[in-house]
Length: 315
Image (cartoon, rainbow, N blue to C red; front, side):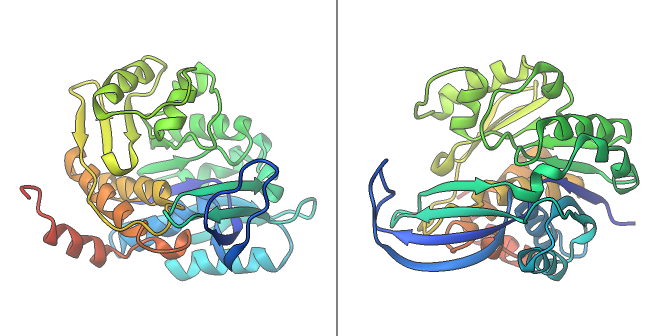
């Protein structure tokens, strides 16, 4: 029986505009083009996990959409990737979530999210998630759904014996009791600094070691800090390890972190050691930033395997 990954989180339709530079407050800039992509951090991770898991890992999605054309499109995108959408339910009280995304020529982005139906994934719905969790290996969470729901679902996943992974985005302070239910915390630089109550700064791999240790004291068993073009820094209580990024030409960083989390979860679900899982995740994220869009940028398993063959660990 294939190991299963459950993703609890958001589904959004992404409206993406390319710009010369990201607008400053009060500034109007002209866009180069406009495209719509299926997105939402939860759905991005689910689609990426299904594409990366291939025939070796089953992926289930839990989330909320509205009764509209965007909902149909998002569920179709998930199903086409091989994700089980039986626990993606519609609500009449809100429209499907949307995200407005600006991407500059360097591939950096700025995002505004209107949560819509994602906000209706309520704490009262948590107990109904139990059959979806049952028998799975890992559960993935983000913060685009209500925090009370995330906390309750984390606890339920732990009860059902799943390893829990939290991507703490969008960045916000988190209570210690929630972090104590997290097995693997995967912030990027800004999210790690926010969790520690520190000002924004560029984080070097050496500085990330101290930050990861400080974050582990808040409750998670392991911390993996995503460092962009510096790769990632992992600390699981044994020894911190820095895994460098792969050099690529960046077109769009949207959902790179989601692809990283999905790839990490797939490798761990397959029983890979952490060092291998981190390289696999870095490779998947590297491929994703060479493409436009969120779910569309996630690579297939064969692409990551071929990429790693061209970039052996000794290189």
